[in-house]
Image 1 (cartoon, protein in one colour):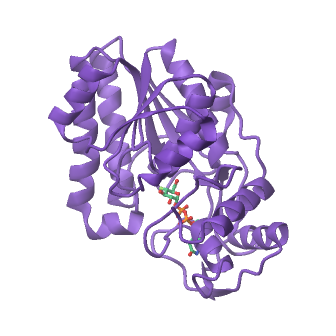
Image 2: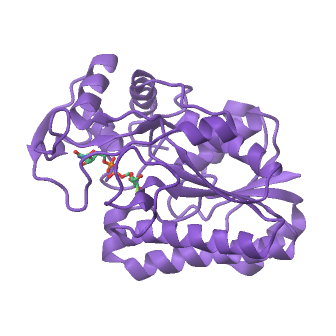
Amino acid sequence: MKVLLTGGAGYIGSHTCVELLNQGYEVVIADDFSNSKPEVINRIKEITGKDVDVYPIDVADKNAMKKLFSEQSIGSVIHFAGYKAVGESCQKPLMYYRNNIDATLTLLEVMEEFGVNKFVFSSSATVYGENNPIPYVETMPITGCTNPYGWTKLMIEQILKDACAANKELSVVLLRYFNPIGAHPSGRIGEDPSGIPNNLLPYVAKVAVGKLPKLGVFGNDYPTVDGTGVRDYIHVVDLAKGHAAALAYAENHTGAEAINLGSGKGHSVLEIVNTFSRVNNVPVPYEIKPRREGDLPEFYANAEKAKELLDWTAELTLEDMCRDLWNWQSNNPDGY
Ligand code: UFG
């Protein structure tokens, strides 16, 4: 039985694909390449020496998805495909709701039709909203999000919980990611955002490689260690291993389980900038800017549940993340 990765050519999907192939899984990718490059597939094959079937389709295209399921013996699905930019989701909320929710519903309907019951979902720490105390624990009340992107994650979590209540054979793991960064140590796959990056580390890397003049640090008057925002950064290779562990868990359980994938540690923006500079011996010029609307001062995971249920903990350090990111960025200054 094969594992279907929707959005498998994306940043987290491609790293998970490599991890699964290395662990001996057979993988099929469905990706419309709207926010990824076909070259990713060549790189995945190069790193692993293994083949992967690719369907260049939109997950919301039901007929195309049915064709995929009828041609491949799919046993489980990891659903990465979706729009993911917080700011853009505030400008184009309908596009976000339509795309993210439609694709998920279509996928679940096709899975039901073909009797596939194992599902791992890319959720986000953003579902904890702005009122929960840190560290975030899975048992906390989830009451709302601050942006449409986050709401799509929250709504899809609810859809999946309801689907599990109705179908006792369904097994769902809701992986709540914290802040994934870094790249595969080979330097052959990594994050390749189109246009000017929104997230911190891709921006830092573009400044370091000379593609952007200066990083703007959004606020230095937060009640944190040095006044800048604090997040729980996790190496994308650790995150990929977390998906493999979640898949194994889903094989032997039913029902819906939300699990944080984070390191349990917070790092400030300045700590990130300084570590990146030091480890890679490259300057990262920055200036302090006003706070970015919608940002929280500080959050990080309670990572106990992942350890208990998945036997998984984040192992790679901030230094590893910065070094691997630079290896990717400096060898691929224009991305793929
Ligand atoms: N930051 C800057 N300058 C930048 C970009 C970011 O100072 O140019 C700061 C932010 O203010 C924040 C920190 O760096 O303090 C991290 O910001 P990111 O944009 O990298 O990440 P966020 O924590 O805002 O958001 C990420 C994901 C979302 C997800 C959220 C919660 O992008 O998809 O984590 O898990 F919803």
